Length: 392
Image 1 (cartoon, helix red, strand yellow):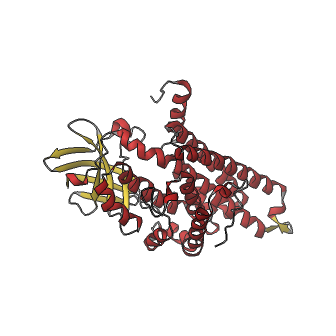
Image 2 (cartoon, one colour):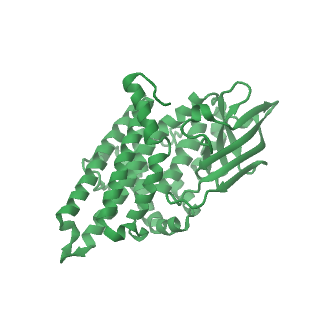
């Protein structure tokens, strides 16, 4: 399949990919354009997830991590970023689903699991047979998860007993397993556990009435004396530092997702302006419309450059928390501007989901907040600049 550079990739960053990577990108793009794009507005309006695409996404290479020897280029954070671009420019919720399945759930097992746990769970998650979720955020603990977790884990012989609650857990209404992070009552350290959804005492209830990422099935989770065997404790997840190893990788990919959301809105706006006629000509020939499109493309291009570099640093093993934090903070802020300008281009039609831009406009609000608010990420960067923590 011939490679076609995205028109929104104005400086041609995609051309740094290998031919093998480009081929996988194009195969995923073809699937998303033909099978996913036509249905997302309907599912967004209904607030439902199209579960029929789970195995299709897996079959077209949207899942898998660096542990998979058959696709060694998955070692590349840059390549995974471009996969996020393809997903997110179609729909931010679908991109988020993969981010949870791939980066958070599979990433926790790949990063913190034993060899046996990796062999048991990762291949089935990679194929789409098993859907995963990631339970860190709680009703009373979001930005302060490092110290503020209230969910507890107590060792009882060869088992662990989990009690507590989680909130905003993506995929959790239909996931087969959820990686639950809980504080060990014995040593006060945060530890990770693989919890099957059919475990007695585990309940996931869908969060209703969302205005953003309506396709994502977020849930409130309650854990009431949930008993799991010690074999389901992630062997190498023994403090929040281990949780942070997972988040360090996924936060950079959220930045890519923000750029993808900007690109989705921008591409829909460009298409609209080439078709909408006002004052006897298509509006893409109007000066002020071109100004909004040019500003949007500038935001996208600057954000792509930052994402490329921060992912290169991750590939080189030199990325630090502040690097991914700056990328997440910057790209989501520019995304907010961009989707607003694209909505403005469409005038009244910009608030109708039928034209796609309204969906990207609404979904941007969730990306702006999740995996670290702008304020928290700027404080991580501020600490790196000054050497002083100013979180409270």
